[in-house]
Length: 249
Image (cartoon, rainbow, N blue to C red; front, side, top):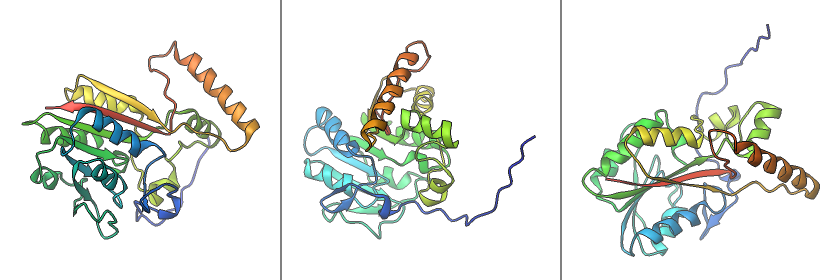
């Protein structure tokens, strides 16, 4: 029998680290993979007119809020701690969504609610989804949710070689607050359980290795996974981020 001993470390969880943030919008750090915020704006522009009311839940420093505001939407933002808020044209409210979404509901109604790279930080993801849907009971509202994708090829390689998922490890637990590993099919089942019939999934920002020859190997592994997935119960998903949009009412 193999036994593993664990040393107790500092239990305090840091939810953000600017040093790990590569992308910015108007000098505001984007706490999401490349292309995620752009896709959110694109999906909402396809569905909503300018002036539509949008809640940005777990808004970070305000990069997505600023982008939505520039697209002509009326944005209300919420975050655990707004001290580092940088989107000057959008108001941000302190709100611990692990506890309650009552404050979010109080500032509604909304035409859309965004929770981008939030659900993996929460203790009860299905309860969070239920609360989002409950906010929309009296008005048809689009909800957009994203999370790091533990099922893409890069994450599967990390699991095979190191026993961790990409963006989910002991370091990410305390260093980034990623406490809930959520493959997209689990979120999809949560939504089905909660009565959401139509769900559109997108997979964003596929990994690109900086080394040319390693990139060839990686692409070959991705193609093999794509072929093998044809006989599996879940479709192939390649991209650092899994994102779903659906209409709740």
